[in-house]
Length: 96
Image (cartoon, rainbow, N blue to C red):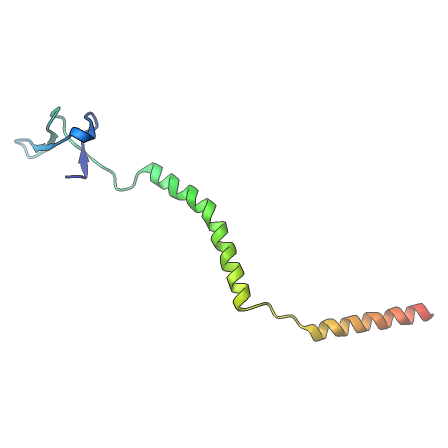
């Protein structure tokens, strides 16, 4: 019975009755009851707004944790060889 409500009466004082035809009616005013929607539009908007604020934060934490578990590998030997070759070229060009 909590899925139905009377849109005209105060929800605090509502009570439900069945009419002779089997339809649910309000015990105060006698109008037919309306079924409550499972998900309301303002709930959808609130979820989208909270996700738009939280998803970047969650992604950044995932990225940080991923980099701490598997740090990116650097090839230091190739870096040293390239420094050595550039220093040789600088020496050769300066002596000419």
